[in-house]
Length: 125
Length: 352
Image (cartoon, rainbow over all chains, first blue to last red):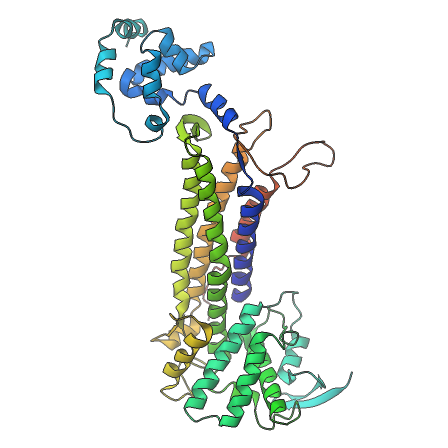
């Protein structure tokens, strides 16, 4: 019985591994355009902005964005909290998928900017 | 069909005239017809290798004549190669700790050896299945040893390479996804960004780890009870037998790490090592459930789901809905491993 179970298990795993590799993984296509579209329409970038804008501000921007059907980038630009090029730098692929150095100078600059202070008082935080 | 008559401890048995197996095997063929499952070629080669090592050891100790030894070894080599595979074909579901498997081999080898020495099948004139082919052995040590050897071979030669190829394919797919940003999800909800490279590398790493674990578990099968004979005490074997037989076994099987246990009494009653190896296989199977589930979600679509990847089309998905294609392979993989986990895993429970 033990012999049967072990031989059968190993045979099943081996044949399944081959089928999985040949008929699934090797021919798998990554849909780059579709993935980009999903990502840009999502709020996945929001977390990356927390070190610069703070948790409460980002949360508020996310909620507003969901109500209005806008992306987090759109919302940041709507309230002029950061420039487009600052956003691009902070949301660069290497910054958002790995540990990254926080640009504290940029952070401090944003914190004392008029638009930021106005937004915070608008949301009461 | 014509028959020859063989006599054993229980009486007379009619055995087909020209076969190499004998009365014990004939009884087993009649008694055990429970399933259609047969042991693998690896098992046959393993039991042959055990007996070859025993014969070499016994010859070295002067317990078998050079003439008989030569004939037995020739017969064993033929047995291992598969010359008698249509006669080594018992149902794998059998009782008695595999005694039929052991005797089936003993009889084939004895009859072939006698044939080489000029005697008729069934007479056991020069070489006897129990006295010579089975010298210093019992089913209780040969069969567990053969089970371990067969599984170690299969793991090294078949399963491990297949898994390493799968891991390499995932790593290669990860390279295709380098720099391709996507949404990372937790609880199937949008979370934070990641790349496809990270996604596929993580899958590869999971399988690497479980393969390492399975390889570690397989080492528990290096410990053998060979030489313990019936209950592990070594009755009927000379003191130097264990060292000689394992030396030959390592050479014959190519498995350098085999060793005889310090406690062959424990080995004779314990199937723990096989349960441990089974847990190693379970670790691999578990990973696939996760990986296949994720791929199925990522493939959901083509127009109204996540659809971040496209799995290869292997068959039409429906007999009624034209153009529909299902993720058949990932579904099959997940189903197969779940069946493996729930039905065929070796949960070893000790009964007296």
